[in-house]
Image (cartoon, one colour):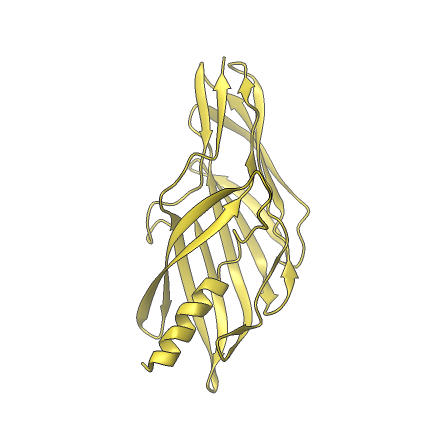
Length: 205
């Protein structure tokens, strides 16, 4: 594969992952992702560092109710990657684990725009946000806010982090579609937080 094409595919992999491309408010926590994209039979490792804004109460009584909120800000998808056209990004999936020492009660999505129909599902202790639409290159979009309503467990702590332990168990995935020469090339990418920091800590009393 020509070096210029390799660089283009590596770059489009970055553009294919706008899920955590949040504008950095003062309270944002930077999360570093290790990522790997696949295209034309080759893999391309890269890193992604973006802030994520996650809120939770400072304390809660054992057996009490609390909510963890993940609130993305609007982002703009680039229209080009090097000299190539980024046509769209699709199949956006972002995961958040249900924190230990808590029980999931319900979840909801609010707001968001430009990403088509979105859904939130919880299976096996993991909340999964799926955006079923596509985001065109150059477009502005906003993922919906995720609210997880929980019941606190025994006295101790409830800590929030993001999901993912490796490329085979990612917490962030997307597929970029880039126009290379005369064809459109799909560039699926998978990422996991590395390291995976604690984003919020709630004391259970």
